[in-house]
Length: 217
Length: 217
Image 1 (cartoon, chains in turn red, cyan):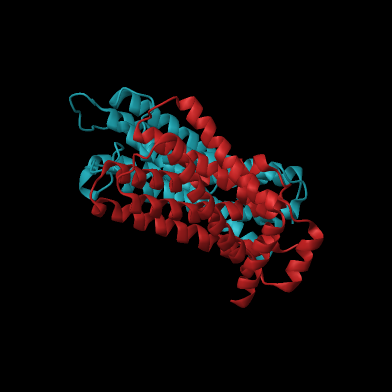
Image 2: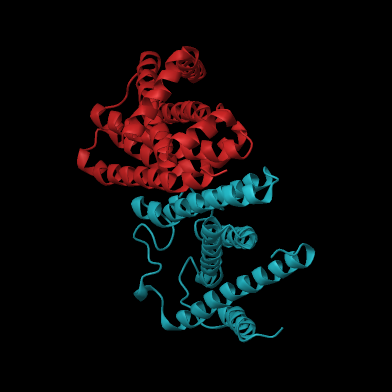
């Protein structure tokens, strides 16, 4: 437990030292939102608003997860391998990325609302599904990033591997988001939220089980 | 080499092909006798899942034992499963054209099966990106496990969550035991068995071909 906490703080400290990376993420999100705002040209229907929202969040999560394994050099990896168990490493990376992506998501929502409006009626449900979605993206993409870093550190490969697998998550998230914008009673969404939590637990568990096989050299 | 299961395969498939077209089925007003598609479309998917399970089994065996032979089996069974998956999609589209007058509809089960194909195609892209056999085997085995679990989610879990046009989901008659009459069952079960045995035969031949080219231990 203690090494996981140490590793999380290590990631946070490394990130804080290179503030350009964090700034880069925020800039990425803001620029993408701006592109959407300019191309959509005015009022969009709630479903379109949601579509753009989730696509921007998806691409932001790929960007942030790609940095998790791709930029580490082999010497440092060997050091980590001798210091901590693979389970601690993957858990710390997943937790760190979930937190980071959640913060990015809130920034994204703020800027997006500022520029394109806010058709959501049930805000609590919408924020919940956004944060759960961030957890799902972070856990899936962390493992995919680990796989593609071992296979040549190619961002294209990460996208190719990641998109099919992330689709059920997106499908469930957009379903719940549409229910949040339609002003339906919360009881309609409960089973989908539970399914989302189950999906996230599934991908997190799988990542933790499978990562040790990747970590072996 | 003549084996009992090869003879059984030929017998089952001959019966399924001839009986599938000549034995009586319920004829309905708009659908006519297009239910005959059941005899061919569904076994394609069962066969695909059977082969993907074989691939999963060998991936897990490789991860635990590191014997390269398991990687060969995992790769070839995944490849043949793609063939059957494509045939499943094509037979489905043919039926869809006659029943729903569209080659494709925006339906959870259809999208889920297409995305499964994409996930396994990404598996092949991943394999191609690595040269060293042991590393390729290990990393693709990890992704194979991931893709299989998500395949189960796409094909089994999601269609039950959402409404669907596809027979067997969304309240439509399909696989429940009282939906298939005994004459149809008489053709359906041999068809499933025949196609699974056929896929096994093809797999064994492919393994033998590969052994002939480059023997592995």
